[in-house]
Image (cartoon, rainbow, N blue to C red; front, side):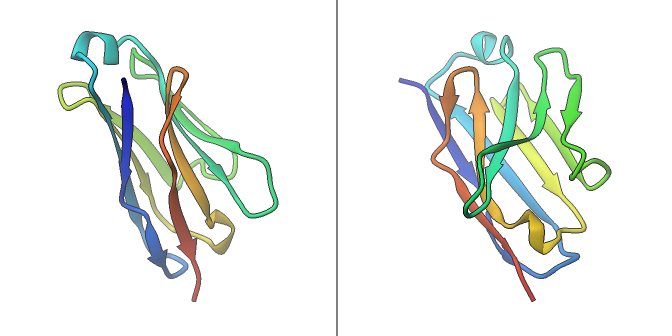
Length: 114
């Protein structure tokens, strides 16, 4: 069974950076590279929303709220996807979820507060 293992969340101050990682374990590389990957987030009291996606071919898409501050990337050889988050704002506080096809990670809490 596929598992998405996320890491890198935590508490930071406004303006700081964080890098989230997600490993797609128990899956062969050729299958991993065939699917798009994404990061979503859910803030308290709000619905889950798209943050960024990266297609199998490498094209990326971002929500308006993070464009210019966040960068999504993938390392197919390691079966990982990353989310580099810069210039973090309090409104970025949320649980961040990694997505691969129909599979989801358990979520990482990111708190941006002074």
